[in-house]
Length: 587
Image (cartoon, rainbow, N blue to C red):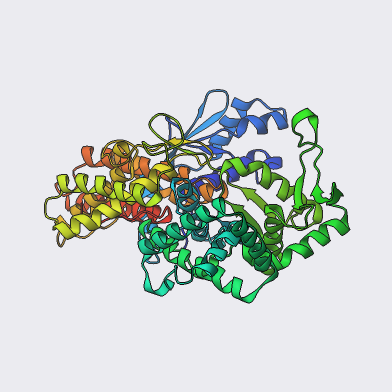
């Protein structure tokens, strides 16, 4: 693949050369470009350089301007602004030529290069619990984690997914003991679909809970079954596996509805680290990172204190010898660092678990499992709220089932698609409705900064107006329609043509796609990519309103505008795909 240097980077290099010629000690200095309302780019690094060189900023900027080559190749004009800023205008020819190079890339990467030194990132996301229904609280981890993987993969990073499902603990003693006493309650997973799997799990859970709460003898047998599970009893493990298999059938059905690929080998739950936890505890105790306190093995932190200014410990091993979440999380870090050779550990978990992971990461750093070369980040996300601004619940006050939420989104989307559809069959309407509805749910989540709460408003999510995925999908479909109407007239770049202001704005934004993806990936900020795509669709709408495409003045202008249309469509398609959202060809 022939990578294309962005116009921003080209201008940086252009200015850096002029700066070093003017101020030798500034060689390699970053001119700090930013987009400006008064010019294509503004360089605002002159002020800092002038201060360092004890020079007058405006005089230095004026001297630099005299050394910047201008003309038709890259920079059309550069002028001094304010106390020493440089306003730079890119030549029309440079914009079109750069976009033409991106258009020529047949790999689908739009000329965006791979990272020079990619690493390996383990992304911990989409963490449902065995034998329990997925609810609205599981949505954000899945959607954000999937988008982060898409962006990181695009930059060249190797990502490994980990779905740390809740498949271990005391509740399984209750469930397994009930199965022992009521065999055949769970049908083999191969014989059921997702809905039936969840129905089976719910039935067994409710029945076992009722017996557990009413029968003290059963409760004691269930507790002994937990011990058997943890000690590796063969019969108990086989029954436990039934719950896991049945749950996976259900998980896969929900994730398929969410249009996400979940790989079986990446489902590595708490149970996977069971055999490591004793060694993890021993290593922490031998190194002095963890100490014994009231019979438990804990890690203390000077800056984490609770009521009465008492230290809040991270409990690795309970006084009764049992292991908690800290032991499995620290064991997971060992596995991901030493077995998977990860350079970055990324956790997409509820922000309410931030303190727990802060302590886990610090304990791992003290032990040396995390360091300058291996880092961990907690992508804590906010809560999905209802229209009342409170955590999203049903009218009865219960947690909303994720499947119900997704089904309703698709149903609402079908109404929108059917209203606008002109030449779609009913089957096509239903297919598009799934793509639009699921895309609407994902985009509403991803267009919000992950650490913020957001309101779940389906009416707004499926609206054709405003910052919604439907708006972006319709922009894409409109472009595809124009390209079909063009018939035998093919898109072609014509760098010799002068560009309309709307063409320039669209072209400059198209060129910034790669820079935006890299920035969003580096900051774990999918909302920045979503914002870029919304602005792209908005700029395209402005271009379409002001610049006739098929009825342009000359054949060359028709071809050039079709070229801008096609590149916009490709960029929307690629960007939405990175976020896990489909772009239908017709709507």
